[in-house]
Amino acid sequence: SNENSSHTSCQTLYLGVSSAKDITEKVSVSLFPNPTEDKFRIVIKDYLPEHGRLSLYDLTGKSLLSSKVRSGATIIDISAISPGTYIYELRDGGKLLDSGKVVRI
Figure 1 (cartoon, rainbow, N blue to C red):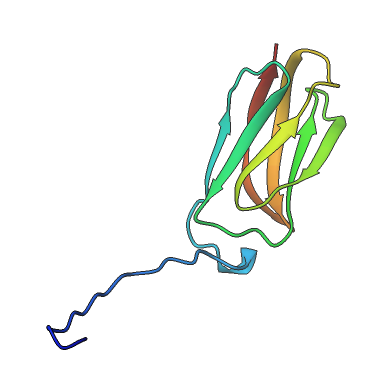
Figure 2 (tube, rainbow, N blue to C red; figure 1 turned 90 degrees about the vertical axis):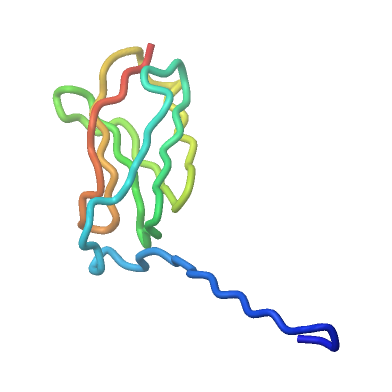
């Protein structure tokens, strides 16, 4: 307030989940572009992973890549991997947040 008048403003602040133990809903995850030539972006919305990790497997289940991820966007470089279809898993500690397929062309 000042000599002319006063003003009040209220806003809601959403901080997100701080632990995998607190998850009650499905985490919003986007992976794009898919298919991709050499890199893709994985975006985690409204969730703060403590130990986020993306793992990439071939169709026989062989682990090809493991990369730390954080809240927001993380770029994953798969240029060293041959073109093909792969399975990804996004985990935070022991909790599976998302999984699916990614295609490298």
